[in-house]
Image (cartoon, rainbow, N blue to C red; front, side, top):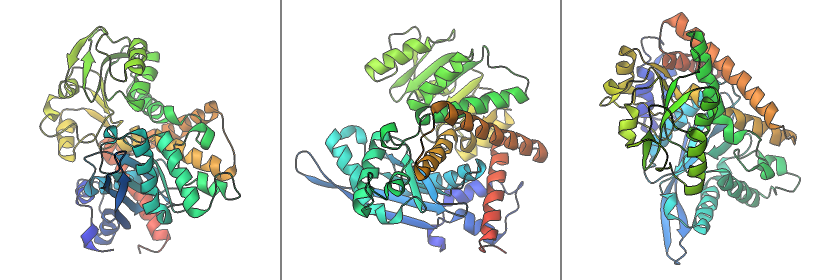
Length: 423
């Protein structure tokens, strides 16, 4: 390891914990330094015949607890510093959920919306051709992330099997299947995976509410991001009696203080591919949506939406972080001072990686579990993690984010000591 690849944002994150968690220089060095960074160019032959190259990344951050685990994102603003931070947060998330995984993250700097279906498949396979020697069921297990999905994971798993001669229908099929999670059901994916992140987030929120003597009935909910996670979260919470007053996608949102008709919104979104404008409510921008009066704000889209500039204008009582790193670190003290409860991303959105762990287990064992069993196992695991975070926050008199970080880091450092990297 060298200081050249230290993740500065990760170090800032760790330094913010200095009052609650005293780290030695050696411990800090291990925690702020990725074990391996892979950078490359992904070639893509356009439909026109032109050949372009795009920046690709895979950061394998820490594997003290098990194989590296983390998604692959396709987004035009993807860059190495972002991937490092997300790999670090994934390391904490797996540790907090008590999974036998480390943390990693990958991506390509490209706007996938500008690609044809053929180009998207070629790009996905091209990514695997660059990293296949560095991944595997006991080494590094990628998954979907921003702008990637189960279809892309199927393509990637197929390409991996070709490159490693581990055919998906052959004797090494378990190894090929277990190298990627988030696949389609017919290609080794797990039942319940599509619902997992939202389901986990909903039950985390419910557990936090219970400790404060609050019920879900009548709670006003604002959700930024109405993709897979945000839309399913809206559905779960509305079924529990919550009032979803605003939702949005990249184009903007819609707000109705009396509550939106979520079933109608979901139906129209499926039909039109966007948050519908023709349901009862008024248009709002994504920034306006964040500052609406509500009980729970669930940023479920992209990173760094709550900043030091808008944190003072947040009116929510609780922030449920369904996106990765939606709150910038300098905004946390402002939110804490206002008495806003932040349920951190490494807890709130851990449902996805928990069911990825279940998928990995099923692939290695050659099993297929029913959705009811998967979701029951997920509920037990996410509720236990939430209880542990709440207990740690009470013991240390700190925020839920600090408590979650402390629990995760304590487990990581224990594992590093056990493998001889720390005295």
